[in-house]
Length: 536
Image 1 (cartoon, one colour):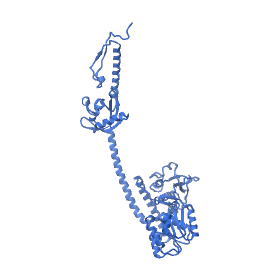
Image 2 (cartoon, rainbow, N blue to C red):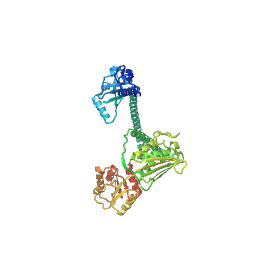
Image 3 (cartoon, one colour):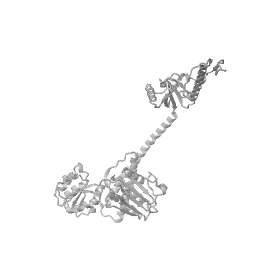
């Protein structure tokens, strides 16, 4: 019976160097004589090893990046042809070098970090300059992993030349630097021009306001109308200049808000009223509906005023002649405790495809009157900086044309008003009226020590009746206002008799308004709003 293996024959296996490359060092040919079954198994294993080695070489040479294999100490033991191209060298010169010789700045600490990462099953990615043997360099991204070619294991370095990427990155960084410099110069130019415009505009508005108040005597109605037009247009232009300045500050994260507790309803009415002349020039009916209840917000008065002027001014701009605009304040219907200002117009409206864009900076819709495209954009920014929201609908519910802008703002605790009034009955009436309008009230009718009373109440506003009071009461008020902790606390003085000239001078110097009794409650409310808004 024939044997499983034919032991009388000799098997010859040739192993050529070009197959194994630099992986193994073998003679051009070897042969084995099969003497038994173990020899046959040995030859089979050798054949498998040769085949695996051949596949390894094919894979190594097919990799696009340069591949360098080292022992655990960094000594180079193998590489692909791509590595020779990258480093402009030969097999002989690259063989035997250390990986530390071809990575600029590399030392033993790098190898320690690589080995530590691999032990923790983490890969290492290095970005460094690689050194060619002709002393030139190229930027590279090097990924390091582990490869098990023998019982000791090796480190495998995948080197990718990122020269083109680095050039593109450097060019991009240079372009960004130039753009930043250009943007800085543009911002500085805008700021300089805006300030140059704002100074004369402020002077014009101040001069016109004084003339309207009669500082140069009584003027004809026609002259007053022209002055009101100049004042309105100057304020509108100043508002645009301030918008440009604020946009620049928002972009550079330098915008600061000066917070104060503000009566929102009064501010709305005061700001919208300034546009009445502009609306009347187009025969537009401007309805300003205020609520008996006052709403208080924590805000920057200048920017809140510009917010209302921007929104109402937009309504005037885009409402044709004989149109109608309604401005009103109410509780936010969502029930979140916010106050809501609604500005509704009968104007041209906004196309549906532009609704989401009109609050973008510099965006304008169709053929419109000239404008900066900043009004709604800066308004939205201001509202959001105050923790609120601004939305618009076009057309408003139940209308065929027009636009409705809703501004929702969080309310805060109302100011605390201390009333010092000797007439208990009149004081009670005054107290109830202010409380019904939303103010927090405490009062005193005993006429005790004013300083102790103020120290105890810590009010936000002081309303004090000096009728029939001791002569030194005005001096006491002046002393209170001179204190650091009450220097900014508004004071309103009530009297039923004329004050002496010295007393009037003290109160005028301290910007303390004086109201004459008998007192109309609405007058006091207007005065309270005026001291908060800085118009008294």
